[in-house]
Image 1 (cartoon, helix red, strand yellow):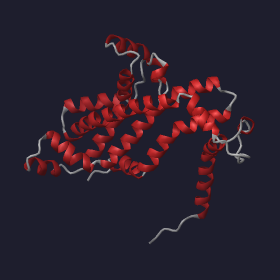
Image 2 (cartoon, one colour):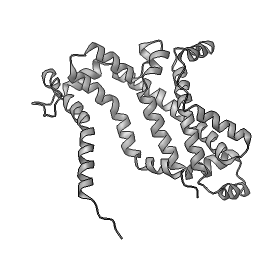
Image 3 (cartoon, one colour):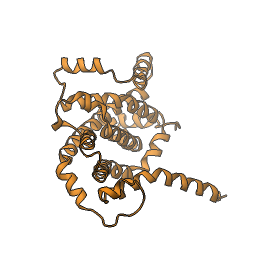
Image 4 (cartoon, helix red, strand yellow):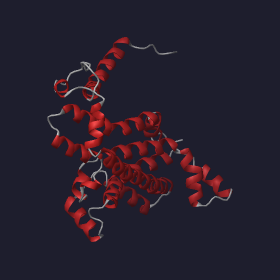
Length: 271
């Protein structure tokens, strides 16, 4: 029997959703306003849409440089996390024994441990990668790896091991089994981790702030911070910078959102 929609519940959820969307509406509308209109922080439409705001910010806010740095750092971090996180997660999920349990617990411990600034700084200096994008990429990858390993290991337990046996009988080696057989089946959790890692890396502020030694290497969040320091009274320009910053991640999320719930919940039910 089809369950009837509750109009009261729908109304409440609609109101709650609108409340959460108000700041976004204020930001987007404010990006098209004049300085005097934007400082009101309201939902009124601008008297005239100021497209020149975007031109000004792109020319003076070092947006292109920030975008290129963010794309490089986010893409590299996401690839490292997906490849090595998937390999570790599949191994932990498929194998049994004390060693496997120790490895799994090691990664789970990483979910509770915060970034140690001083020791991380010393490690980067000893490896001669302090102040480089590579150092930031590796730190971000290390921070995201525990969650990735946990979700992959949970998800793989819901996939029958008979698939592995059939593939091995057909002549698949370990890597071919993982990349040609298992990962296509694990598409939902792959996409989930892609989105989570990309969003966390793109929005990360503290790691680039502490471990990059040049403004030319700054990703877009630090460009926003620097831009706000110079244009704190020009909220129309600040709103433009914020819209430009979140746009790629919003597009990525909207394109792949259908896989998120499936990826997060499928691993909790064993097949």
